Image 1 (spheres, rainbow, N blue to C red):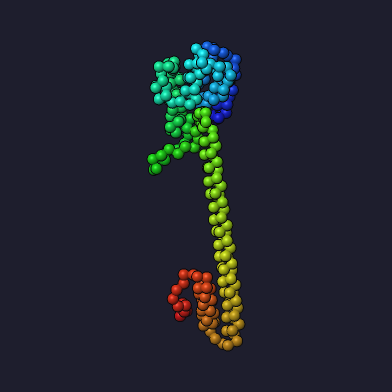
Image 2: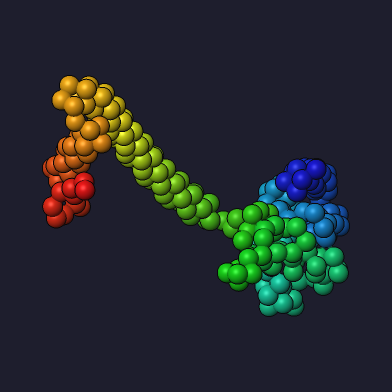
Length: 235
């Protein structure tokens, strides 16, 4: 079972436990949830009616602890330790892991990736997401929309370059075929004319190849090619 599936199972389990408890009894459920080594998301538990009912009661401290693990960091706990209960060792470890996750570093599988020593950076391949603070959803949607638009534009650009490369390849094949056909014509013409006028086949070959060079030079010049100077003559 991968980390996402394990998260879903644990969330369902603790949501059911929290729904069945009230008041002080919720304290042990929240401590267990925030101590579990494989649970890193708490929004669903925060949304349980019996948990939200802790607001403004003598047990509201448990609600604040759950909010700390959903959105806060180790620094937030240290700054507010006077109004929060002392954390057990497993909670301390969990909150520090969540703090590391917030800083986009790696720790015990909650972030997976590859260390690039050449570029001196850590390339993240997977990160277990933290809970969103109220009001963050709109910003996240906008960020994802911008990323999607950029990806679409990049895809269009790549497709255009592929089409251009294919077109250039076809032109190259066509030109090569024209040259090969012309060479074949020259071979046949050399044989025929050599017999008719009694000239050396080598001399006739040079004459026809000179014509091919002239045609190619004129064609490149017409297309704006980079050929300069006079036409190359065969010796």
